[in-house]
Length: 292
Picture 1 (cartoon, rainbow, N blue to C red):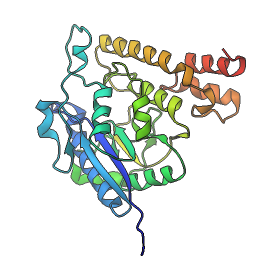
Picture 2 (tube, rainbow, N blue to C red):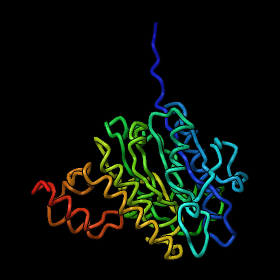
Picture 3 (cartoon, rainbow, N blue to C red):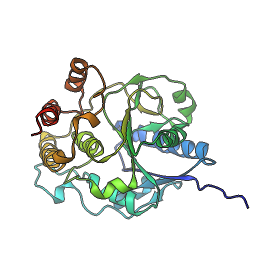
């Protein structure tokens, strides 16, 4: 009798919403969706991929047929704090809870809804998992914002793009999720990437950052997006500092990206990185060498 090995099971969630025609996401989301479906189809003989959506009720019409609709999001950041300008931003924890409970996948993936995939994305994810990594981040390539329709995907694939330092695609073993500390972090505002990545740095046994792969893309060459009103920035900043305190006892500086580099260079790299706070790596370095 020949036993067949079960396929690796992945679940990948995004947070679609109805964007205004003036928004870059109005163009980007359909391209993202089609690229995810294409990458899934390209890997179907090797990997089982569930494409999931976490959405508010009013955004259900945005979700393509190829995606599984998880239960509608029922709260936003405005339910947790007072803001002068109310913007219905979802909570990262609510999106990830639906990713965790709506699939039995071995590994879970979250990426921003404006992050497209190259065709071999899920195949390379499997390869990284086979190397023994229980969590990793894949950085995107920046592509000139000259493409406007999903029918241009074949042209997008030909673009080499440029590196981007920020984090926007997270892959992790499902066993890590129940340990996550996410407090009230909301999506669409700075400090999402820092909060998510610190959880992976702290909790994963064998984390890796892939910062120069041609696996994901973003239309637009900008490093930083136009920010939300400052009150949302300061709100997420407070949430991040609360998360940092909860995770600090689990953090080890040697698990951070770039630690293996020559020490002056790694500190220089950390200081320039938008998702690695200099104050935090200094505290963790002190903790490693002085035990406090």
